[in-house]
Length: 214
Ligand code: ATP
Image 1 (cartoon, rainbow, N blue to C red):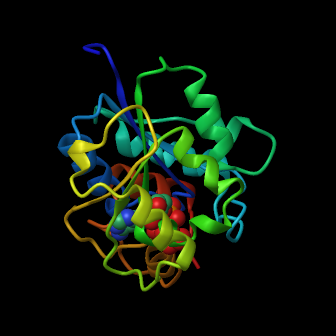
Image 2 (image 1 turned 180 degrees about the vertical axis):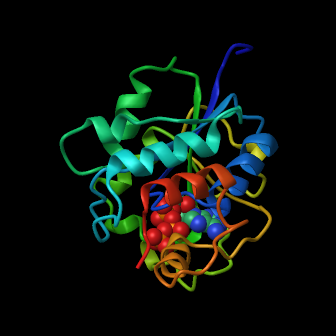
Image 3 (image 1 turned 30 degrees about the horizontal axis):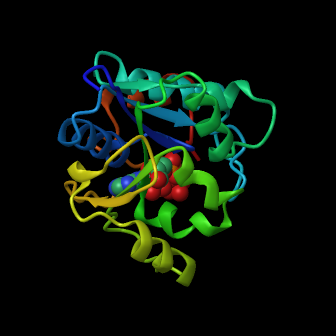
């Protein structure tokens, strides 16, 4: 078991990537002692509006954000697929590259977790990974009954006690940051500053490419 890898994945539109994603990802990676945490930008998210900025720019901004920031890295497999970004496909594809006892952790903000029952083949997700839920101070969503049943059946109080390659769920504390990409897009559209809400390199990319401005 000594060589068993621990890999986290955080999917999102990253339109644009911001400190809520990055600080959360870094804290989870350190707390969980992950070997790597992959940010996975989605191409055509099935459950939400088309991103305002194209895949190439969103990917480039995530690349800028995690450059020189191991264990964070980018995984662009959803952008290489010519179909909607279903997490179940991403998990199956990742699993096929891992050893059977490697641990995979799907990281979801609370709002994303609350939307889980609408995901394609959502009841199969835990066959491939554990789920770690991040609190999100700006999210007002509530867990529906299927999710409350899932929590009752699979929740483990201590995220460090998650056993085996997949199958359990835990909630993880992080520094609460009420930042959203929606807020950042709106600030930029109104010609306001987003300094300190995104890494400077991401802001430089936004400015260089004239993204999100009104
Ligand atoms: P938008 O405002 O466009 O909906 P977003 O800020 O929610 O975007 P996404 O790319 O949709 O960003 O989020 C990807 C993942 O990161 C989701 O699981 C989401 O819950 C989580 N997340 C985003 N922002 C935060 C935050 N501030 N704190 C914790 N988790 C977050």
